Length: 510
Ligand code: NAP
Image (tube, rainbow, N blue to C red; front, top):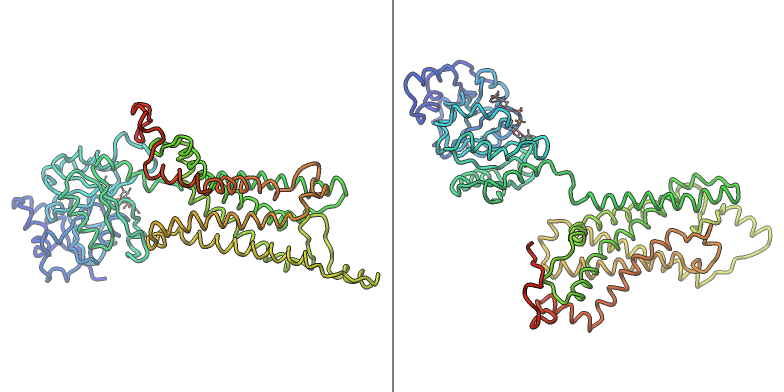
């Protein structure tokens, strides 16, 4: 790498000082700090100020951002405490100067320095007057400081226009280029012109900038990178709770029951057979939980006779995590398919799922020959088996379709009607298919007393309760008279609106 660390007075100085308006003495002081990282740059005229940006801080983010800015055609001037020593890792073609000189070379300055060190900007307050300062900083945890970092920066440099932005990108993603990284940057700030300048840079770098409003939103943007799957928490807790509860329930009913009553050790079933029972149970319950809040909301609107009243908070929260509930239920369905597919290759056993019998295929055949017996082909059983498998396959296919249509890129390609058709109509159809698949699985065992070990129903019976309730309620909602009323309510009709005192209705915005 060709890099010069001698400070030659030429373009470097022109770069640093021409537009700085500094005195001769200041210039000569800065001269000792300034340097070019590319000797070639000395022959190239400096880009105009509008095409030049400054980055304070030569750390991970500063360097990555500088590289992207250079690639996008901007002239980049780094402001550093130690321009000489920090230069070795900086991208080729950038300039590195002391903070004061660097700040004079561009109108837009990215502050890629930790918030704790912002006080170095106080002595520069005069030079930064009128400049646009982009605050990139994040915190280690929420509410770490009383005010947002961007607001703190604004208080330190009141003459500058502070814009919060780019903090949701990582140094790594910036280095990897636009194709391999988040494409959106969020910005906020008081000055429209300052935000426009930042948006212009973001657009040139290949990002789409989303203006979030005033600087008071900065704290929200700073909390953004600290989020840890907020909408997944409740669905994850539900799925873990259900899995654990059904796992222990089935463990007692099958493994412990067999050991206590017959002295038989079938603990090996825990790994595959038991898991393959827990997964579809949890999947079906989660799918029902995905559609239950919508049904409850419809009944609530019917009961209230209006849509202009807030749903209770718990219902609101529940409705907001329906997508996550659905995706987790798809995950469990997928595991069920995988477990089912590996069962035949697991060992040379054929497992009959009632959990009561396990035949060695060969032994069964041999015993038939010995006893000179033949098993008659039973058409009813064949119909049952094929229908059970077919409904399961169809249900899983629809599940996958629902999962695909919940991807943002697919949602963007669908009209609202298409999306609601897939997610609501096909969603309920999926629930119906999977429920029917489970009913067929139970088949005539519902009536057999041997099914109720220790007087407890099997897991698949328990898991049928919720989807059956949801489907029944949905059936009620789509009957013509109820559907007509619900449609009218959703179009703004209110029951008894003429007699009602407006003060009685609870506002939608509290
Ligand atoms: P970093 O690697 O620690 O670099 C920070 C730079 O700040 C240093 O290289 C140093 O540059 C300068 N600095 C350090 N102490 C200073 C002081 N007392 N006075 C003035 N300048 C000082 O940090 P970073 O990872 O680049 O992050 C910089 C900011 O961006 C942080 O606020 C961070 O929260 C935010 N951020 C980082 C990322 C990321 O992926 N790294 C992503 C989003 C946001 P000089 O030695 O050249 O002065």
